[in-house]
Each structure stands twice: as C-alpha cells, then as structure tokens.
Length: 465
Image (cartoon, helix red, strand yellow):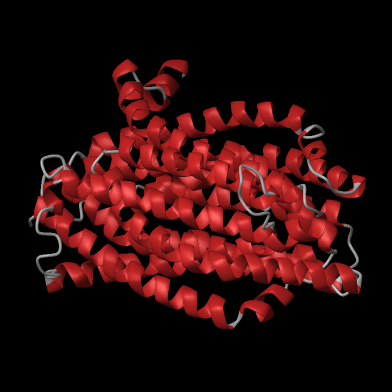
C-alpha cells in the first residue's frame, strides 16, 4: 500500500527539479510582491484605523479587477501552454494578441465603473453602527486612494498579457525580476510619500497609491521591453503588432473556453467582495481585522497559489504534447506536493497569530480579532490548497465549464447566501460567523476530489486532428 502511494503521489528527483525550476521564480515573484504589500499595509496602518479601513475597502475593488484580468488571460493561456508544448509559435502569437485585446476592454470597463461609481461602492462597506467622524474619514481616505489607483489598471492589465505568456512558455524568471524591481521602487516610494521622508512630500494614503501605480508601470515596462528585445527566446513576439489577425476558428475556441473562466473569475472575486461586505456589517473594526489577517495569510498563500499555476503550465504542456497518461501522473504528484507544502506553512503561521497584529497602530479589540482570524485561515489553508490545485487541473484540459461550476456556483449558491443571511439577519458574533464561512471549503474539497478523479479533464485542445 505504501509503495502504491509513493508511486502515485511522490515523484523522483528529476520531477521535483522540473517543478522547482518552474515554480520557484513564480513563488519568489509573488512572495516579494506580497511582502511589500504587507509593508505597505503596515505603513498605512501607522496612520490610523480609518485610513487603513479606507484603503482596505478600495483594495477589494482592485482585487476584483485584478482577478478579472487573470480570468481574461486564462482562457487564451490554456491554448498558449498547449501551443508551447506543441512548439507552435504562430499559435502563441495569436493567443497573445487575443489577450491584449481582451485586457484593453477589461481596463476600459474597470476604469469606467471605479471612476463613476466610487462613492456608491465604498459606502456598501460602511456600517451605520460606527461613528459619523469615523465613517467620514474612512470614505475620504478610500476616495483619495481610489482616484489614483485607477491609473494603475492600465499597466497592470497590459503587463499581465505579457507575463502570463512568458510563464506559459516556461520563462518564469523575467516576470520575477520585473516584479522584484518594481516592489523595490514601491517600498522606497511608500516610505517617502506616505510619511514625507527622503525629501518627498507627506501624502498619506495618496502617497501609497502613487507609489503603487509607479511600481506597476515599472513592472509592466520591464516585461514588455525584455519580450521584444529577445526575439530568439520569444519568436512569437516577432511581428506581434504587424497586424492583429487571429484565425476565426481559434477565436471561437478561445471565446468558448475562455468566457466561462473570465466570468467565473470576475464573479468569484465579486463574491469575495460581497463576502467582505457581509463581514463589514459587524463594523469597521472587522474590516480592519480582516485586512490585517489577510495581509499575512496572503504572504504565505503564494506557495499553493503558484503551485496551482504550475499545474496549469506543466500539465497543460504535457496535454498539448499528447502525453495524456504522463499528464495524469504529473497532476497527482503536484496536487499532493501542493497540499503537503501548504500544511507545513500553515503550522508556521499559527505561532505568528498573536504577534503580527501588534505591529499595527490600532485598538486591542482589532488586534485580538485579527489574531483569531489568522489562526482560522491558517487551519483552512490546506483545504484552499487542494481546491486550488483541482481548479487548475480542470483548467489545464480546457474544462472551463466545470471550473465555472466548481468555483462560481459554490461561491454564489452556498457561501454568499450563508454569509448574507448570517450577516444581515442574525446577531451572530463575528467569531463563529467567520469560522463557519471559512470551513465551508470542506464541501468544495469533496466536489473537487471527485471531479479530478473522473479524468474528464484529460484532453488535448491543440491536436491537429
């Protein structure tokens, strides 16, 4: 029994070397990005609870936009990974053109909504139980921050079209370098512009937003410049803008496979924002506590998130190369590796739960609540790891309809109604409410297990036949 388990779930040295070469640059990139976001968050937290809550509210909407962009590039990315496995540079070029077009549309829609409905969106997260002064300062901070962050939608969207293509072609170091360069700049500008240090003006939350936008421009610029100045490594980028032709058959295929992903990612992210709004019914202290707890759990979550993305890249390439049995075996081992790694990280987070909130300049109640939330999220991380791996497994074979059911339907049919009813129609304390909603992920684990085990996701989308 142990031998069968090892054969199915444990790879050899060559397997882990291949995985680590692919995933370590991705983890480092996101680890550095999240670390700097954490420092940024802590800096804003030194100004006050209201400013921190205002920034946290706006970041809910930026999060929805970012995830929507990931969904926009994910559909053509499935084809891109399989075209790479097949060695078809024309195919990769077509998918990249499609990404740029759909990202441009997403940027336009996102900028319009956040520009014209900013105050209405922000007020959704304000509870009447808080004082008028606290509410007014939170809204002002949120509007100041959002007004500048809208500009950052442009470089982020375009940069993701390039970065995702590089990753699909197993080039993960350049996105990592671009991200590290950007976050270094972001960190220095945050310190200078938030507090008025290093000869810069003191701008508070506006300074934090300006620093973030400049960093996004640098991150996108590095990736774009490298892609077009290295034609031997990126032959698909040659003549990329000579015309914007994409074969109509491929467009239809990408739209059919990509639409569920785009819609799913948007609605899932929107669902997370609705969930945050349900929690905010318990007051702005809860908004602040969730902001603190999410900051550290997001830092550790990059491991299982990027291992999931690694599944999409490696398994997708094997499917595109028509190595179907190998793809299945690889997926089994990657899912196990992801959960095992996350379990170790979760154990490392728990001792930090009472310590990390002490960094923030906020009330003792907020610190205590955020410590509780960190512990609950740490325990749930292995569950998130498994469902994330299942999601990318289904996606690697183009089963985007199943990912739509797996992600969106679960979120909107079960999680959101449960949170809405508890948040709006009961007086349940935030502690049991947060615990119940978080561990509803167990249901999704069971669903994901049977979906993946069925093998329905094993398919080659770019076979000439």
